[in-house]
Image 1 (cartoon, rainbow, N blue to C red):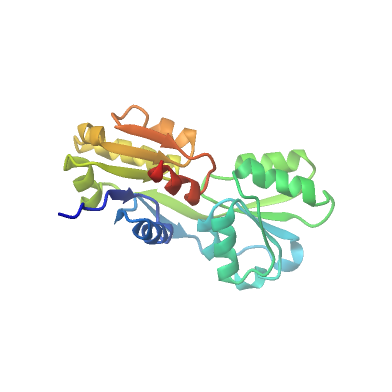
Image 2: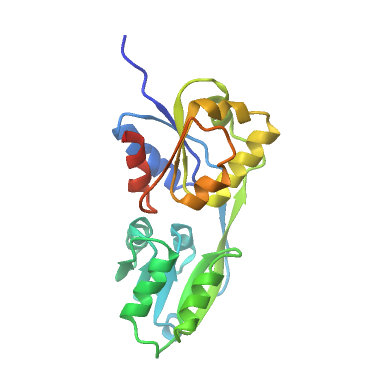
Length: 237
């Protein structure tokens, strides 16, 4: 009798969730897509492209909110997934920092002169202040604009509750601290905490793992680099 593929719970928002699910299926896993955050893009007036020298983006969720008029401006992305999304959206000059927000700051500090027009930092609600402060400390003028908000779901999707509560082996992927906190909060509210004893956690960073470190995971693995490729590699260790 053929073994059933290992289920993997994908908790990240769309469109990243479906993309991750496709990669997991190619790896021989059984992806279960159950986003714990939804993204709402803000519609607002942004500075004209002629007033800016570039766009700084620390999350792929900001890309849909950026107007076509910005496509001739250079875009500095936190990582390769965000950079790929920007290119697909139509941005012609895209540079990836291949890391965290700190790496994105270092990329800009090392490659751009401090003098010039402002940089537009496109962020989520209540995000991006630290990155802005770092760049300003090195003499860059930065305009921070909140262009989207992430909202937690109010109850675990049935697919997520099923994999946690069914007692079988599997994995949970967590790509953000906000998602991790939502998972822990809702699992406690639904009395599902004991179910994590048969599940492994694959987390994108130590801070994400720490957010749910008090759950009784069967195993916890943390990616060496903060990107999807590194997270998925944890499943084959």
